[in-house]
Length: 558
Image (cartoon, rainbow, N blue to C red; front, side, top):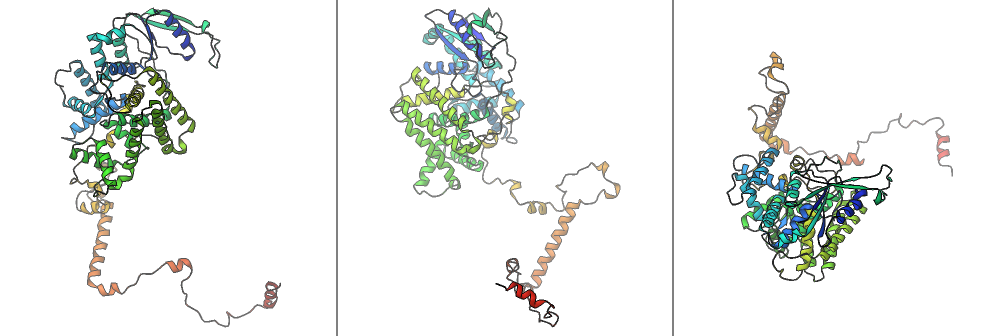
């Protein structure tokens, strides 16, 4: 195995000089592989560290099947939170705190270290079953599988031995350090440092000969980089999130996280109660949610009887139509044309729902980046997962699946607390609601929430009982003269109910008298057409002014 290079102080001005220095240290017969710890803000084309691991597993056929998709890092935390909440729902409310999710995340990592043993926690077992049911994998699974195939040797180990890795970017998470340790195992790591002149141009212009690059052998673990303070571009991330959700549903119809993201996004905007009914029907029929949606929409268009999803047929039909058009494009023989049509459809869908708040130049830039990414993936050759793709459109699906892998692995550094409590969302036109609230397990139809009843009915049902209005001060702060008295809101409610009761009794005693009363119409008075009582003209009203003739002749003069 050759050397590998790590450059944590990434600077775009010195990138070419550092790359040239690293290439000069390589042997001619080695493959020089450039990887980033994660993509820069707004960049959807760069090759990342996790993306290389996923690509290696695809070539080795280490995934359960070719339709297996990879969760993003935030989706891993959200799916684990969902599983913890489902287990807790059996004995309590449907909820999961951030501490519980992080604790079970560490328990899950321990389970991956010994996968043959049964998980020690029922929360971890629920999460493992969820991944198997949705045919998805997370980043920790990818790392564990990569370590296994490297340890086993074979063709994958021989191919990796010919590679010289150049990794650039900050190291800000435990997962990135674990990936670097697995990739650099058995190699000599060269830590690169670049020094630029002080008179560098503000426009970014820099002579490569002026950049001083040095290297030192890294003997200990990979050092953690300090936070750079560079925030991600919310508009690009939100658009990429929606496009990725549709691509993953197209590749893997059992990916429920991607399905929920696509339906909750502004591209479909399916209401929460509709998603709840969809989940209930999916559980009753035993079919995946995507298959349930497609089956229901097709039956509804054929005139089958109504069901609980009938009021939401329009939104569901939009989702099915987009998915059907993507499937039609994927079945074309020409992969280049098919991918271009699929990307154009998704980007135009995102642009149409974004409105004027979504900058048009950002949309065009994203479309150009996605087409460039698809072209590079097609040229590099997306190999099948150790199995031959049957049917037409196999090459197109492989390119779209590789695009989904790149978009899923572009960012790795997230704050779990911000992800779990939806604190990282920014005001963009394409924000997706909190996954735990949208993906809540359906309750039985017989269970009716108390707060679904009208407010007046809830207040009247609590009359004579302790008031539902909370005290605004403790008992010590209440004057002695008022202690023991009934709350004012409760007394007002009792007085109002007493008046209503007396009026109801009076209506029962004198029905004929009340029936003889007619309602007064206000519309004639508003329109000014109400008849007024004529008053007789008196002599005083007919009295004329002394100059009345002059005034009259002035107004009638032509």
